[in-house]
Length: 156
Image (cartoon, rainbow, N blue to C red; front, top):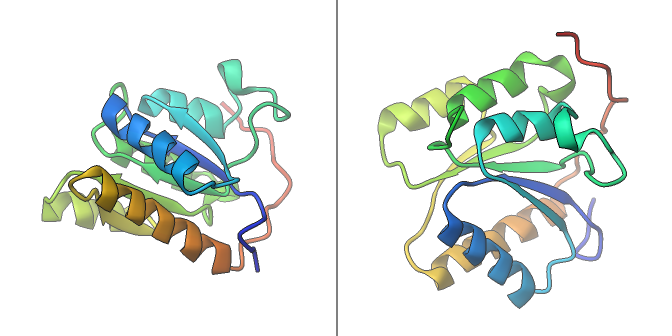
């Protein structure tokens, strides 16, 4: 089991600068020791996960333990990103939590059909958003993580 002193690497795919700022502010406010890496579009998210482009150096960009994924991303939307992640066997158990403003049942259902771990509605207001992040950190500190397999080279 992880504890509050252990570091998780969190990858957040979020294009809204206000949500990015709120996330960074909450990280500081609560003293999270987790590594937070933020990408701003779907293609960049996949580049990070599959170690492409500027994300090739694993010493600079650790493998994510959890992904917080917005749905309405530029270039590739969150559903496409999730579907691509789940299509690769080495990432089929990687926790991917959709964190979105969408209230559409079709978005939620598609998220679960494509294999999201959880579908979370972004709360209104900084305090509520920060408390959600704190709750997620507490939750993940209690979860026994899936043992990461050795990273394989991606074909194609």
